[in-house]
Length: 286
Image (tube, rainbow, N blue to C red; front, top):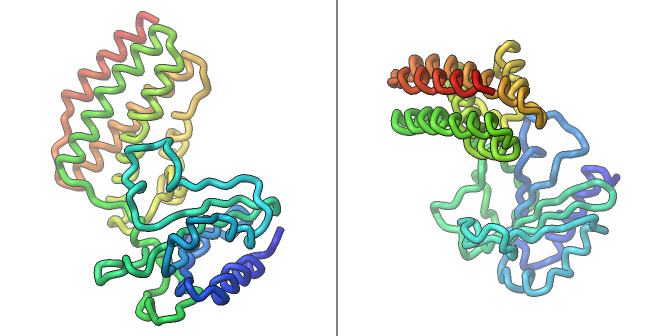
């Protein structure tokens, strides 16, 4: 595997020798002082360029970065036609190489820079030919910190969680495990994880990030809560998924009430009580 210094030198040299590339910024985990170093961290790179079409009209220029296992061009894909990113200014190359390194390279047009544009807080300038980013601050993860919810968002999140728990219960009672897993993972879990995030936010004055998919939650939760969180990831067994859903509802209810108290928001205890009673009746008949 090529070393971090070798990859950095390749990225910088490519930019230095191309007059259309005016600046290079490193984002992501390699710019994050709170992330432990390992070989799986991506190189999240932004090239600030003139004449972006000269790059995107023929993608062969990226071969300079090495022999690829697989590549993705998300801005040319039709998998997610409703994705707002389809209309953004930049263009991205996601590349995994045979030596195990990965570079996520975004081209951003210079002519789209204005007074409202600021690189994200996890940014380190690797090259700046024109002094575009002279005032950039040292990297931090502040742009990714948990944000305090409004009272309405908090109430809507709780309502969505309790409402869709009834779907999962019916699916499990019918033996429809794929359906139950689908609604749990696509709707219930995002609400569940959001409440855990807000609980952590309240405990830390909204000064930390839990990372994508909650990967840093273990750093900020008491061990007994984190262990319960892990119990909500069962296999395809009906009984274990039933027990998982009950653990999820118990933990959600506990943390939602604590979070509501910290934020000074109302919590609809009737929703919780009524849905828990419904789940008990459904599971009693299984």
